[in-house]
Structures are given as structure tokens and as C-alpha cells.
Image 1 (cartoon, rainbow, N blue to C red):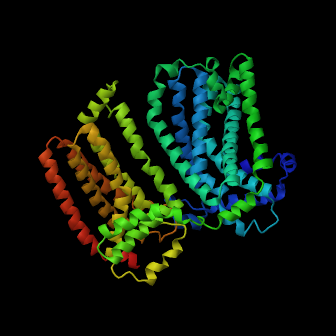
Image 2 (cartoon, one colour; image 1 turned 30 degrees about the vertical axis):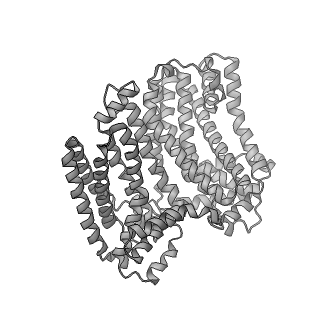
Image 3 (spheres, rainbow, N blue to C red; image 1 turned 90 degrees about the horizontal axis):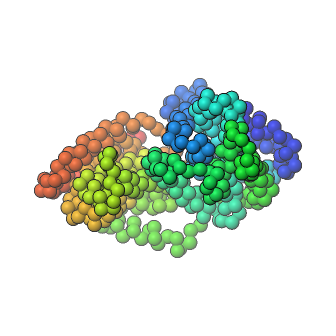
Length: 558
């Protein structure tokens, strides 16, 4: 599929040459890139067997995932009465999904500095190099786009006919190309104006923001679609909608399915011409100097000034003497604290998962906790938060941050720097890992508990304090169990990979924590019982931490 898409993208050879692109070098670069993508194994299929057989199941399984997402987007066709609005929302959501993928995953292809050692020493100009990366992203994106829109295509062809279905195919590829060019145009603009370090910071921030938007849309979207003002919305009567590209693309279908109008013609022309204008801007304007910027990114995260360091070292250096009991434990604490604050790869993976908790809080506060009669007034919502014990659920949802943190804690791009663990050597791994445990709890779990507590006291009263302490104790116990059963290496000492070997273990641990959380919810009205459970839980944690420090950690010695 990728090779077919590549041939289609390279078909207008005259167009690429007119824009100053060396088409032969472009073809060679893309063929090598796609070959490497096909040889990259899919971890859930078994890494060793994939390498031996050379089977590339990554694209196929991603295709299935995208098809499921595309089936979910079909909800617009059934929940929105006006077809024009429904298809506008459909293309808007589709473009948001593609933009999220570009920012979260495929954008690293555009700003990957590793090619400087192979391609940049060769006579490859800026435009050819920049276009090769954009088309590489485009090939991967279009392959996933087919799966995303397949359910919508089938629905459109059945309900509105083959002709409209063919128009829908054109709309889909127009939307995909427009999304690709707009996102890459934004990145190329930032590459020209920002330093390499600030650009990487921007990518991390955008990934978190887009993740929050998508999560929010998943929870709030169905509720908003049922609102009367959405059902009564008409594009023809709402001028502020005319400035959005998804509306332009949806207008193409209106030309084929309904009578012509000047508004539909103008919006359709915008939908067709905007991708061509974006392509011209990307190749002729923003690709200039691209090679030099990529080479600058290869220097790493960039030099940090003295003003960048105190805020990140200040908290770690202050907490380490208070929370740790020995230099070795302090070393484990400081290594995790500092590297998690500096590593963009770690932050790009973990921080989006941390955004779930604020979204859950807003969703539960405004839309209730699964009750059919969702309160309308602000006072009713406050009362529901008090009566429904909603903060208990939020406390235990914060435990997912621990799972995510441990999942990425042992992996790093520069894992070879972990030779220091062997050179030391670490005489008491349990003491060192105790510092690692405390750093993860202090940096990624306790702040959520504290933040929810500060929000909960004005809403639910001081009675929530013991609930927060009990949830923190149970979370701390869970952190020890997860570390013991899933961490098989020192922090940041393993190459980046996908692994599902610890899935069942993590699931069992979370199931046990869920049982304890449910018991907490049942006995929430008995304040004395909650305080007793709190003391018992913290006592168990202290005993387990003592045993944790004496653990031999044979897996680390291997």
C-alpha cells in the first residue's frame, strides 16, 4: 500500500521539478525510508519472530485501529439531523485525528536530526530534503487515512449513491493533504524562527494540548451533539462557519448532492485551492535553510543557560535530603528527578497521560457520575460532588499516572549511558531503587492527590482529608508492587521498545487496587473506619518499603 501511495505522490514529476525538487533523489530517499519502515518489527507480534520472518504487521494493525476510529466518527451521521453540518463535523474530527497523529508520532520524522550523518553530506538541496520528509510523512499518513475513512465511504456510497461516494474519496484525500501541509507548514515556520531547543519544547507542549483536546472531545462530544443549538445549526445561515476548512471540504459534496449556489461554489473552490497554495508555501518559502536547522538539532537538547536550571533542580535538591536516608538512595532519587525533567522523549510520552485527570475532573463536575438526571444548576452540581463521593474516584484514577511513569522509566534513547550502573557498581540495588520509587511517587502521584485535595476541601469539606490520605497510601503500596513485578532494569537503561509482557501483572495489581478503592467508597460515611484504614495502609507501606530496600533485585544484576 505504501509503495502504491508513493507512486501516486511522485506521479506529477513536472510539478515537483518546477518547484525545484530533484525527483530522482526524492524517489531514492523515500524508497529507502519506506523499506526501513517495513522492516521495523511490531512488538506485540513478537519481536524476535518478526525479525526472522521479515513480516510487517505494523501497518495492517494500525489500519484496523484506524478503521475502528472511523466507525466511531460515523456517529455524526446519526446524531446530527443536517447532512451538511454532519459531514463538516466529520471532516473536522478526521482532520483533528490526523493532526494529532502528525504532532504526536509522525512529526519526529520532520525534525529527526539523524539524517545529517547520511543525507546532508550528500548533494541534496533544502527543497528536496524537506519535501522528502513531508512526503514520507504523507505516505504513512495516507495509509492510515484509508482505514480511518473506509466506514464513512461505505456509508456514503450506500446512502447517497456511487457518484457522491467518489466525491467523498476526493474530499478525504483533499482533507488529508491539507492537514499534512498545514501542520508541516506550521513546523517549518517554527523551525525558521525558533531555536532547536525551543522547537522541541513546542512539540512536547503541542502533543499535550492536542491530547487534552481529543480526550475532552471524546467525553464532551456526544453530550454536545444532543444539544438543541447543534441540531438547529445551518451552515448557509451561519457566516462564522465559512472560515473553517472542514466546511470548505464538505461543500464539495453539496455541489454533487444538491442544487448549485454561489456560496457552495466559493467554499468548494477554497477547499480545492488551499492545498495547492499550502504546497507552494511549503516548498518555495519555508523549506529554505531546512538542512541547516536539522543539523543544529543534532546537537541534542541544546545548551541550557543557568536561568533554566534552578526551577528544575530546586525542588529535587530540597526534597532529596528530606525523603532519602542514604547517598545511594539519594542518587536514585536525583537521577530520576533530573532526567524526567530534562528528557523530552520521556515527557512527550508521559505528560499526555497526565492530562486525563484534569479532564476527568471537569467531566465529572459538569456532567455527573453516571446519573441519568444530570443536575443543571451550579449548586446541584456541588451537591452531587458531595453526595456522590466523586473525589474518591478521581483519587484512584490518579493511580494510572504511576503505571504510565513506570512503563517509560526504564527506557531512553541514550540508554548506553547506563554503563555507569555497572561501573559503580551499585552494591545495594534495593536502596537505589527505593530512591527511584520515592522520586516517582513525589513527582507524578502525590501532586495529583494534593491538587485534588485542595480542590476538594472547599467543595466537600475537611472530611475529604482522610480519603486523600488513604488513597495516597494505597497508591504508594501499588507503586511498590508495580516496581517489584514490572521493573526489570535500572532507570533509563533500556532501548525504547513496546512491550506487553507485564500487561497481565499490571492488570492484576490494578484489579486489587480497584477492590480496595471500592471498599473505600462503601465505607466512606464511617469516618473513624476510614482513619483506621488510613493508619493501617501507611503502616503496610512502611513495612513494604523496608523490605523493598533489602530486595536483591537479581534482574538488575543480570
